[in-house]
Length: 139
Ligand code: ZN
Image (tube, rainbow, N blue to C red):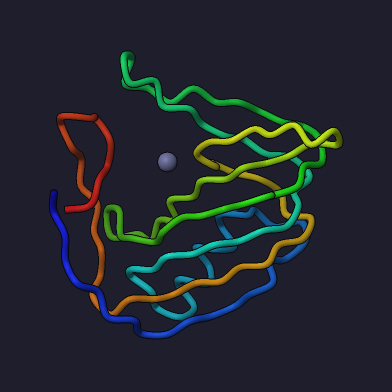
């Protein structure tokens, strides 16, 4: 395990813009407040979504696409630097009109309405390629 203490540098709440991309909105806030490390939670609703499932055997992401309105019952993630760009690693539990849930790594989604809480940390977090998992993980 690799760990460090983090010092909070500020907290923000934000309403995500209708019609914008869910993850791009989070990255835009991170850029606006110069957050190179953050943790966030969010909720709301989207008009469509693309979740990714990481197949550990094939070491590849497989997309799962939804072209329907869904609730964002829960969304959690973090912001770190990937190749010097701010990356919002975002996971979500989405639910449909019968309460069925779909969950995974949120690649993209069109915001219907979204409410976000972000806690920013002082020291940056960086990602690098990890050979054991073939993923970009924290240093
Ligand atoms: Zn993920």
